[in-house]
Image (cartoon, rainbow, N blue to C red; front, side, top):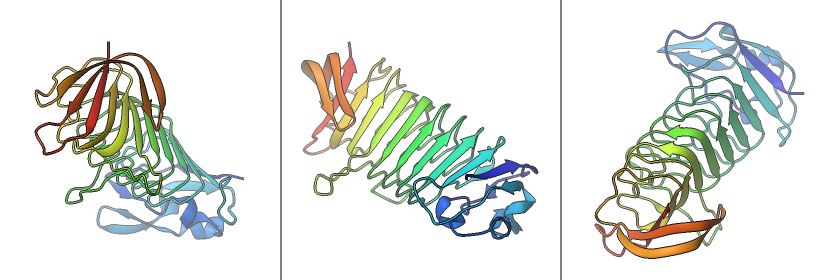
Length: 267
């Protein structure tokens, strides 16, 4: 049986709720879950002060599910460090969704704030609306961002999404970001990630990219001059699947030494 959290008292400002995760809920009673600490500004509060909690939980498995009902744009860090289970958010949610995620799945029936899937290692995140800036990225000061798993955003992702993504052939980990459209600097500092944009990007896509693949189904509004046109291809093979059609392939970013990245723009 899933655990349902129904928003009863919307927070006035950001609510740090990293305790809302199958890993934390597993094995606890509803009463114990309600006593879990959250932080409303600089005050420690109880989870039950904001949410009505129903259902029960047992040992964490892939079937363990948490459902959040209500619009929660100020509730942050949902699903942080998840390793398994399922989190469904029926409404909008705040920043840092699924950051440092290692497994399981998150589904958002709405929009997500900044830093969704930041430094994610495995698992999946699906967002039916938009995601804020720095989706699937590294936090400031880190040179490695998303290293595995998949993020799908039906709408637009904000600036610098997919920054510092890094793959590993040794461990067969290939981070993937899908989006409907993107703001500036999609895939900046890409080191092996696969990014697919179903629509347009604002520009400067792939800046400082050394490895990986970026596929644009729409238009690139401002192509960097440091990308060199290689030619036309009829199929692009990626860890996210094969894409057939006519694409113009560019290599780059030639503003850095020994670039080995590929940018494909559909004709």
